[in-house]
Image (cartoon, rainbow, N blue to C red):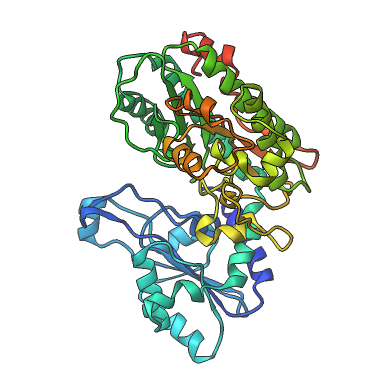
Length: 467
């Protein structure tokens, strides 16, 4: 948890933007795996963390805009609770940590909301992403649960997105502290990787490093030889000589701030000639994107610049053909690079996307494309100083997509399908780093994790220190 003054300042800025009404923040509850007393690891709602910093279940807060009052709601533990949980701070003590002067039992939330509704005051809330919160809001607002999300306050969403998008120095420190752990995770993974061991052995080791450091992972680890499957969370395969291993993982700081890094490494410890050729194209695309990213630049333009590097590199290898500019403008490159270049990063690994991706990644001057590939951009808008985002180009050979496009004769003027067939079993390569947009341009956050071919091969042979 950060200092209380940070949360006080954040709520003050919120009140200045929301002109009237009552603002509700519902903290998350424990989520049972299979029965109530056996819960998944608790994760607090990120907006509740942002404005109050309290990482405990069973809390809510209400901010009265006109009255300039705030109340933290929750229930103090009973003696029976203490037997199982040990002593916990009172709700009043928790409020003091967050700079909130008033505390009340959770049951009073219904009375507070009912009073606001009687006076015809707006009740602002963010769209729920958990069913228990949607049900709770439906009860508080006396509306069908199916309508709760659509009635969320657009004004509050836009205000929260605007605030949370600009990271403060304290937040950058938190992200970099998470990246220090992530660096150790990746060096350990590179040293462990070799033919014969299972993917799950590496996952267990790197996630153990995060836990041993007092952190959680920011998201379920992706570690797979099937790198063409973007969100493959299975870890059942034994590593095979000659294959590539894609690792997409990151620690989250104790205050909840995420890191998100991807590296692609050769199981055998050395890249083959074919692997090197594709890897160097992806790395060149990432370096081009990093060189461009800065304030006032649309991230869609950065994405397209990376796509042109990819298309040109694939043309040099005979996989694409024709005019590179035209190929990218029409979307032919998306056979190999069908996802966006990156996303916002903060308290969520895909920061604030529960509030609506279009609110976060787009603006009045940047609308979502309907072109395959380009439509998947999570972040396309103009960048501003203080944004933290990922930069993660990739090249993939997805058999089902290749077969469909080849059958439909899509972009035959730009794609050499006969040549593509020889890469059918290649899988994929992705390289990802986290960037802070500055007034001058950008800064890659964290200690550099090996990504150039000679650096990766050196780390895999034990030549890089974990600490």
